Image: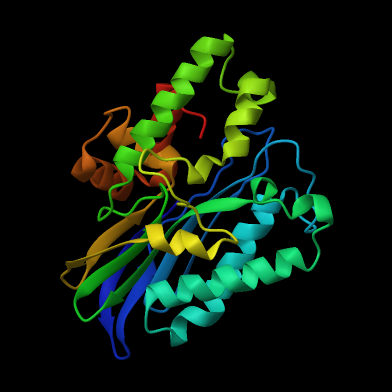
Length: 263
């Protein structure tokens, strides 16, 4: 999770300044598959995922780790000269796909074995914040709570059916089958929602914008942090922002763990 970020007007236009940042894996037994970054008036957060059972081929602890790091590096390099978020995301998808498929053996050319990520990309420009989102990372502008509510309900149903806990369920055949369908591609409305190697995901890209004053604060978060507000009700949206500013991200996130979330 990254943020809050202060939005101020610099000589070259709106610039983003990071006030706090935090990134933790959902479990100490798993690699950290999240990434975030800031470049000029652009910022992004990526929450990676890959179905269990696929050994990494890209030189990282998992191919989801590789994907979010690769995408972050490309956003950092390309964003300062970009004029449009959709075009920037499309370019990064193409580069990631080419890099992965150049090394993928035949058995890893099946899309169900590919990593993917939730993504929110934002730009401060002309007194506005623009946001482009795929899947369930969060800026206050998007509709991720509805997506996470759907996924949370499916996960709770699986725990009931398998009689397991959030860690051991990952080893069950039901969970593996569910992941093979594609965690970030499965939504009630259908379609590919996640950032990865599939350009058709752009058909599900959400765009929103809002006017902001100089000095406004923006919080970008993965679903695990945002659950404090939209799943567990520990805060409303404004209360979550106030807690992050007053206490910092790490003490605020502690309430996620006490509420039972490990993501």
